[in-house]
Image 1 (cartoon, helix red, strand yellow):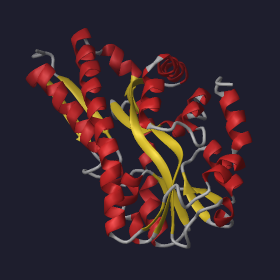
Image 2 (cartoon, rainbow, N blue to C red):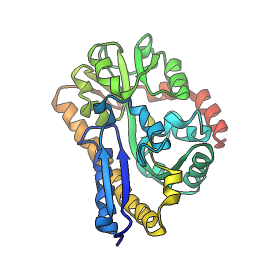
Image 3 (spheres, one colour):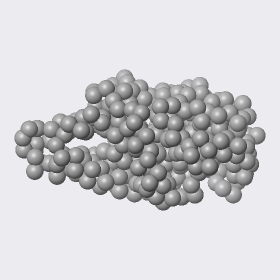
Image 4 (cartoon, rainbow, N blue to C red):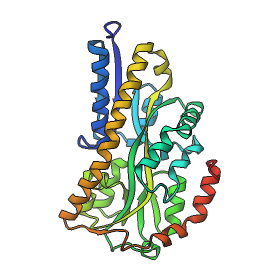
Amino acid sequence: MLTMPEISLRLGGYQPARSVHTRAMHVFADAIRRRLGKGVEIRYAENVTAAGRNAADLLPMTEGHELDICYFASSYLTARVPSLEVFDLPFPVADRSASYAFADGATGRKLAGDVAAATGFSVLAYWDNGFRHISNGRHPIMHPRDCRGLKIRTLDNALHQRVFRRLGFEPMAIDVKELAAAVSERRVDAQENPLTNLVNFSLHKTHRFVTLTGHFFGVALVLCNRARLAQWPDDVRAAIVDAMTEATTAQRRDAAEDDELCLATLLADGVDIVRADRFDRAAFVDAVADIRTEAARAAGLA
């Protein structure tokens, strides 16, 4: 075990304490402590937005040495690493296991290399950021025509905005820090997120209609400052890799379980859940088919 010199790890996130990402970071921290003992000091800012920062600040904070490790949606790095758009294709994998196999295989290794070449990050893991679904406060969404004219909060991602505009929405990029207020104050009519965020940010208190579109399957990159990683001794780097493997297993398990728990919460609260038997999935897929083909080609998949 490491005793001297002391290693300091600064971790950052942007979600509430009960979120699967926050819990997984604690699994990682505990696993590091077991491996390195008292010689490691870990400081974890669970939610930087509570300190007035934007969630997206995690990226420059980590790249600029203010933090060592953070997690963030891959969609926010596509402008710098275009190949990451492979994770943003609309109406993607049928189940989680297909996405995990994709990320953990040769494609994931190539993407990690692309990230390292274009940024100051090293990719430590690909976390489950959930199937994204659409909620709104107006009416059930069952067909693209139901989307027309609705202002929808989106991630700051050009491909996402093209998809929603094609479906008839008016997309607005809003940071996570402002998401709950934008929904409760009705600055937006709709938003799209995994069910865990819908519940954890209490968006369902305003948005009483949820359509289980699964239009994107989100991937959260766990990113480490690359220069910092290179400075650490071999045993520290090995401990980080092993601990992150443990955390990723826990995160993916919890993400799947959390989906079921959140769905039960929404149903118990009387939210109108539009499942596959009530919405025209084929119409949604057809509406964005050319965008998907073009994006897949750009990402090297077609």
